[in-house]
Amino acid sequence: MARNKDLTIGNPTKLLIGFCVPLFLSALFQQLYSIGDSIVAGQMIGNDALSEISNSYEVTLVFIAFAFGCNIGTSVIVAEYFGSKNYSKVKTAVYTSVITSLIMCFILMALGIILATPLLRLLNTKEELLGPSRDYLLIYCYSLPFVFLYNIATGIFAALGDSKTPFIFLAISSVANVLVDIWFAAIGLGVVGLAIATLICQVVSCILSIIVILLRLKALKTEGKVKIFDKKVLLTFLSVAVPSILQQSFISIGNLVIQGEVNIYGSGVMSGYGTAVKLNNVVITSLTAVGNGVSNYTAQNVGAGKLLRVKKGFLSSLIISYSIVLIISLIYLIFTNLLLSFFINNKESIDNPKEKIDEAYMVARSFIYIVAPFYIVIATKLASDGVLRGSRMMKQFMCATLIDLLLRVLLSFMFNSLLGANGIWWSWPIGWIVSGIISISFFIYRYKNAKDVDSGIEQIEE
Image 1 (cartoon, helix red, strand yellow):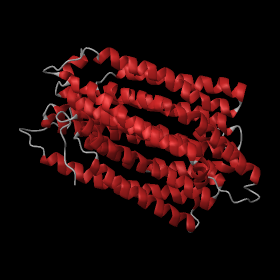
Image 2 (image 1 turned 120 degrees about the vertical axis):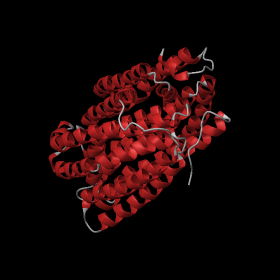
Image 3 (image 1 turned 60 degrees about the vertical axis):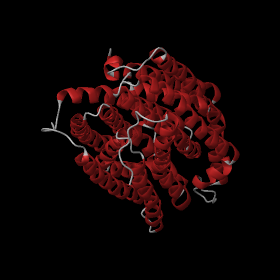
């Protein structure tokens, strides 16, 4: 099994390829959880089940935003201390991050359980879809402690330069999730069965990850007593985690607003949009995984004071991201209908007439054809975002992200009234272009004259 890896030495391109490829594959398998649910729902239960999951999915993205923020906060500070070879602080950072994240988790879990129905009503969820959507969402809420702990564990693995171990765990649990999905759908458990299947597999992958992390921490040699909780480490963790949480939460809330607009059009448009968003999220999640790899690479090198390597790493990350974009975009544009057929139930019935099926296909195709050509733009933005996060330039990171969100939400309302549903899809690339220019500008301004120093952390904090 893979071990910890120092990202401050060696060829940046080779290092990042070896480090980011497992992260990219992990992102794909992570998407397999939700995609597996959607495919099984659409093919074995019905297109209404696909709509039920789509509604719940947008709410769960808010929860994932918190878990993702804790992942980033943990990985950045642990990577900095690991890069500077301060292993006592590495352990303190891990313990402090876990305690803080679990407090957030249980508060969020309680709110999710209490507000499940009001949130779904706020999304204009049809009454006939409300019950199953709520059940799916509630089961997801009960799984949140495992979601948080797993995300923290993957953040720690990444900070220690190991992206292969969490990939192995995730690959096994994702494949198992699909198999259990099929089993539970076949015995008639419906959407609830899909949620239970996801919960079971998340529990297993979480427990395995935590066990290995504890063994890794035990192997790090430290002198003296390690603090379990440190206020200074807490503040550093929060300085990275909170902006990341806000960033992801705002994006998720923006997506909820857009989902509410889409739901007005009816179940055909909802099914098509839900399918297209799943495919879109495969790309975004994959590119975000590369960005997370760049964050950990940057944080380790900042901790070691090797700022010149940060610039080289950014250029290397663009090569990786553009390769991913080229391959996926071609697949999406060439095999569009084939991909959509995995999600959308083509079997005609009273509840699933031909008109509804055709509408779902038309909506999904329109979204993909509009958005896919601009994936190279979001690839550039997410790579530069990774450097900003790893450098703890969170104000600049937040600025670029919030502009993207505001543009997408405002333009979706404006274009919806002018162009209908297709107008909503155009808000994506426009937001990416503007926010991408801002993000890359911040990176160039900060690193154009960068040079190696004794303490990279201190230079960044000045």
